[in-house]
Every structure is written in C-alpha cells, then in structure tokens.
Image (tube, rainbow, N blue to C red):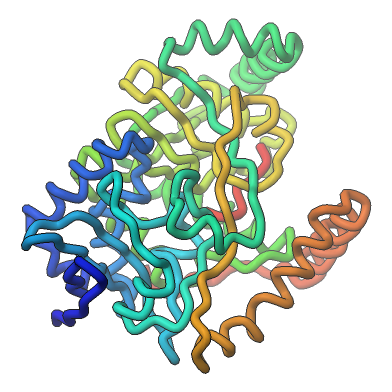
Length: 381
C-alpha cells in the first residue's frame, strides 16, 4: 500500500512499515546519526517495523527530495484521521527523523498523511517541527555511563552516601537469608519474562492504572522485540535470581549506546531486600561494560530515578491539531482531560491525594490475573 502526496519542494510517500526497503532503513539511521540525536531505540526503524506487525494503523511518511529520502515520520492512524505517535503508550521517544536543515510545516505534513491530528506524550527534545504544539514539558532522567560504571558509582556515593551502601547491604542480606544471588544481564528465560509480566500486571492493578500487559498488542510487541537481532533496537531481559528463583527483572530496549528503561518489576515477597534497586545497580554495571553510554529512565516521577540519575532530558506532551472535524473531535476527547492531569501534577498535595486514591481503588478491585494468549508506569523498586 503506497500513497503519495506533495509538500512544497518535497514528495511524500506513505507506506506501511513493512514496505520500508533496506535502503530506506539505512537512510533513516544515517539521518539520525547526522542529526546528532541520541541513538534511542524507540526512534530506530526496527521499532516502527515491529509496531507495524501488531498495530494495523501503523504508517511511515517518507519525505523525498529529488528521489532521495530526506526524512521519515512514523505514526499510527485511526478513525477520522486521528493520529498518534508510533507505539503511543509504550514508546519513550517520539518524533520525526529529518535531515538537518529540512523545513516543514507540521499541519502541512499531517495533511499530506491524511491526518486531522497527531498526539505525542514523549516527544524528544530538538523536534522543532512539533515542539511549538506541546502542551507540557516533562523531565526524563538519564544515567550517564560514558565514563564507565566506577566513575558513575563514585558520583553516586558523593551525591547519596547511604544509598549505594544500603542497597549493597540488602543484596548481601538477600544472599544470606534466601540463597545465592545471581544476575544475568541478557537472559534467555521465558519463565522469568512471564513472571515479570505477572508482577507488572499486579502492580498496574494495585496502583489503579491500566494493565498494559492485558493488551495483546503490547505482549506481542515485547515478544517480537525480545527476539530481535537488530543491533540498534533489540530487547534485553535482565534478571536477578536468589536461590535460582527470579526475584526482580527488567525488559528494556537497547541500541549500541542507549538502553531504555521500559518494564521493571519485582516479586513483592522479597520487597524488604529492595531487589529492584539491586537489579538496577547490577544492570548499570553490566550495561557500562557492554558499551552502553546512556540509560534513559523515562519520564514520570519516581524516587529511585531521582537517586540514580545524573541529569534530565526534556520531553514533551501535546498534539498537533488541524482545523478540520477530526481535529475538533480529538481536542474535545483529549485536551480537557490532559489539562486536568496537568493541573493535578503541578500541585504536589493534590497529586499525592490522587495517587493514594488510585492505589486504594486498585487494592479494592485487585483480582488474580488470568492471561489470555501469549512502559509507562515503571515500578518503583
């Protein structure tokens, strides 16, 4: 399926992700490298292709100049032309991939894709095409590992003297009281992955949030990315074992230099040992040894992120809306609720009360999960 449109000075081909040629994917990666943007796996073509296999509305607009690709805009299209970032709801870095110097009009790009709106919740910094349409700027904490883990650990000791010492003490206590502690950075363990999904689903229900793993497309996406061999976008399952039993796990995406923190969880039976924090420290050490320079912890507040981060990136939430009926439908359906969430987030006491109410509602309705068939609410370790 190929659609064609024209922007001033540009030809736009709208493809399904699987229709991207090897040369298209090569050019996509070259343009990302040329732009100087971080090699975030969510903005690699392999992520878009994987989403295309589980989301029928996935599309890619290929911008051409004199027959050569100069940009790629991945998105999902729904009823009335309502668009969203590719993988919205689990994607932690969103936007268009454009050759430096390319100038476009955001609404004109949407028109060429037959979209009435385009929604984003983790738009990366530097997306000048879309940032003017953002409703909110958010902090996305990261851990810098380019200098190696030992250098990072020294900084962590200086910033939080008791944090590292207490976490390591809990790891030793876990070994003494439960059994030998073992960590695997890149595990091939389907049972541990299933345990991770169950722990995470229970956490979502317990905190009153929508269970992402109750959505078939997300579990299928995780499975696809877990089997990916693409160096710039592949899943990594990290597992912490005690007495050969998984007690904490994380499934994330990595490129050669960036690891995106995605789905962490732990067995609450071992909560007193803080297995999630033990897992994170082991992961950071292993990732640094494996060439990872940046671990992106993702937007959203959490105490452990504040403890571990070295700095914040900026990401954006909002929507580009065209003055057409579908755009009006999007605005009425999404923007009042977004404004209400922003009002609550900006008032800590009110936000705390809302979080407690969600947790109580989740506790009351929590039921054992029955899974049929086969990021972003990361669990606070």
